[in-house]
Length: 161
Image (cartoon, rainbow, N blue to C red; front, side, top):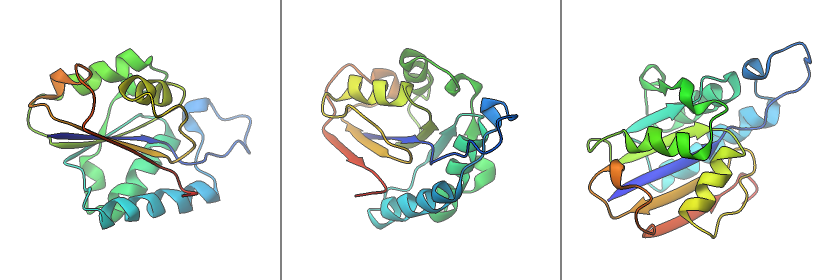
């Protein structure tokens, strides 16, 4: 079994219009929501074996805040440039390249690609608000098989739940 946790970055700030998109930080709500969502995952024993993140500040900060509450070392977060401004198929390719070792992977990225990928994996997910976590459990031996069959379990959680 493999568990994929797709996490849309927490709410970001648009207060400084001079910042490039990749540099936008989290706002106060985002800084509260990320640890809250991680605590919910920890209560369900959903600590990841691997956290992947987009290099954008808002995504990486979300990953770091969540890692702290999930007993995952921030320095072990894998930042992958391919997860920023990527098509859903490109995100899926990154996941499929993970091999056999990690059983539970958290990927922190952006919309619309995460919502589109989540919908591709399960028709039941059509939207991913900020800091939403889409959980997919697949009965596969390798990440390379992802997307070849329906997930055994799907759950979407948002900070407002």
